[in-house]
Image 1 (tube, one colour):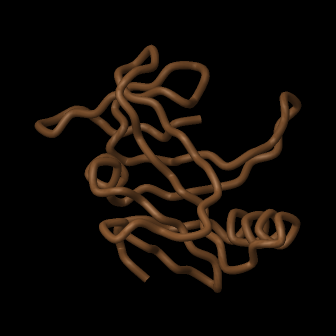
Image 2: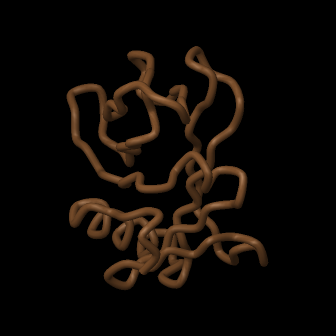
Length: 121
């Protein structure tokens, strides 16, 4: 497993369940970062059957996460979790590189020279 990205135990269980329900047990969760959002960048996720040639493939406990090279620079050291809340549950990114995030939890900003990292919830 690559040290660039990890999954919590709950995320592993939920991802396995989603892949089985989609009849894609060998599929993966794609996690990506795109410019935009109220804090500068936003997270996105989708299911992926076949990773691209330049994707980083992270395998943990029998499930896979794929990340493109652009996104990987912002997700190094991040953890994928699954949370249940009153407003609905889902996969979330706890990113040590995010120094600012907005209340939606899907938008963040980074700094490479200082600042304190905060989890994105």
